[in-house]
Image (cartoon, rainbow, N blue to C red; front, top):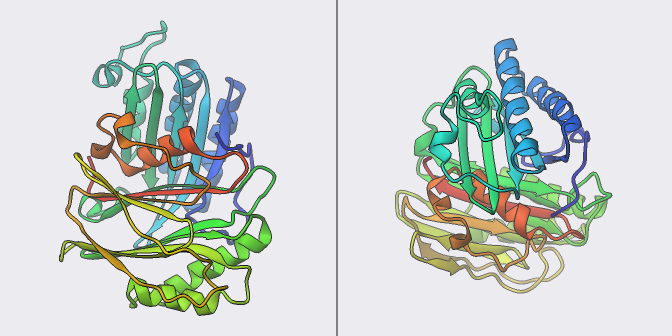
Length: 350
């Protein structure tokens, strides 16, 4: 598992797609988790009651992660979508897991002699909550609190779960991602700046800026824009997915070692990227087209995540919030000596 950064806040101006990780090794970290969540909530301009609910929910799930999961990590991310701001808290552990998830939400249920109100209370206090657990393997839980109430129409649009963290010893990540979505179309960017540290982050951040400034272009056209725009930098691996939800297609254009896969309940298909480095080689971007349905899940990740993962390791995960699969892949397959970025995208919610 990648190194976590206890108590570190995002650098000013850093993209909201970045995560901050806090190791939950013992009960002393519960207070740190609460304080860090409150800092994120204040930056998202949550109201007083929303901050209070976020504080209680994070405290409850952090305590569960330590007491029942044997410790794990909290991954915090500030949310910005369609003019709405919020906070996401994603918890992962490799503990004993839960044999009966539904029963664990019942008030009064406990396996350790406590009052047994943590999971049920946390779910009621937040706007979005989901959990995945496998006995003997561990648990992932995600909660979100939005400023002003739940996100309208969240179930109809593309949902994106992510973990994006720098390598140990760095405050800036050379991996980044961005998305531009509407009810019928979505553009998803994943970028891995060459190497790591400030120079890699410079390339990644410039790629995100160029991507957002050219939202009307196709995936292949955007890759061409980045080819020119990243020439002053050390370059990057880049992949862009353009999802036409109305037309039932996804167009994928990539250069470098960003991995892209399409998952369904019965299949997994790797998407094609060209070899090379964007910004350093004059290679034309070509988009490959694949079928897309409302049951398709798109996973994109940098080489900071090992490629050996299989979705069947996590039974039922494709029916759950996409952040849970992102967290589990990070937990099980992140490399210790590289920046890590993983995205999981699908329509609707469980």
